[in-house]
Amino acid sequence: MDSLDKPSFDNLIFYITVPLSSIIILANLFIIVGIACNRQLHNTPNYFFLSLLVADLCTGIVLPFIPRMALDRLLDFKSCLLMYILPNFLFLSFLFNLVMVHYERYLCVVSPLHHSQFWVHRCFPVALLIVWLPPLLYASLPAFGWNNWVDPKGNKSSDANETSGNYSGTDELCSYKQVFPEVFIYLEVYGLVLPAMLSIGGMTGRVLWIARKQVKNICKLQRAVDRLQQQSDHEQQLNLRYAKCVAAVSLTFLVCWVPYIIYQLMSVTALQRGVSASSSSLYIIMSCTGIGSMAIIPLILGLANKQYTEPVSRVMRKLRNRCRAGQNSRDITL
Image 1 (cartoon, rainbow, N blue to C red):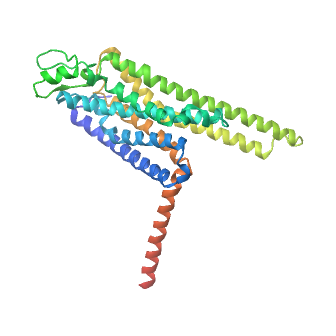
Image 2 (cartoon, helix red, strand yellow):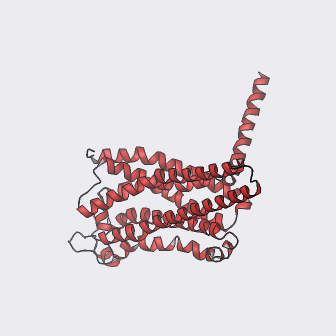
Image 3 (cartoon, rainbow, N blue to C red):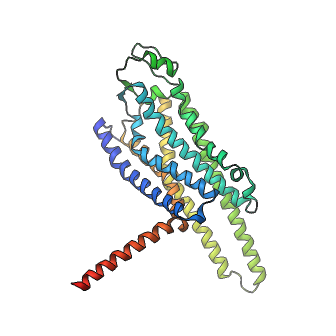
């Protein structure tokens, strides 16, 4: 696709990310309020999910700024670090929280009778610290000196203190190449992001395999009880429900994961070739939709659970009924 100039770049990012960001923020607030208002949901599994929603909410807030990380601009050293470190930290914390939620639910399926004895339940504060502290430490490494920033005199910044002392105070060209060394990017992609995606995929596949095995066992017991009927209605319902579950997981993968995988492949390929892909409209679209589609995953998990949405839905129904009652009373008066 054709290259874009900076105004077109900003406009394209705005029109794609602002609607996505608004939907993500509002939907997360909707689910968070639903969990907070329902005391029956105040338990460890839902606390993990609440942490994921908070991380997703923060990702939705910084979503319009993430694609702009590929755009060069004039900023001082501290502002440049903040512009890159903060979105990176929030995205990594979102990814870690997503892995933790899948892991906790995976334990519930694999060991339903003893899942409360695992460390994630017994040491909840430690588990919560794991999903927030390592992303913060890793994302902050450029601020502690692991960067390619060059001061106006041409000397590379070896550490944050030295750079702060020698910096002249004028704005310099800020780009991701100056903040994130190539080793840092490769380590994040292949050491953090890729293992997280593979672990989520492995746990999801394992859960589907266990569910299929349980469906077969139930069907065998059903046939043993009713030998005259080859396939009962209950067996058909179980198979249909399993097929719907597989279809939902496949659709979620295609909609939420595939755009992000394509975006990562484009980024790594451009980095390996030493070319800039940020001027391509296709890269801009994939960077916006890739991050945004991943942020939709917690919303799918949350909105699919009626317990999360019931308190807010109940309040909205009451407000709607009051509005209708007021409208009816005004019509009767007229």
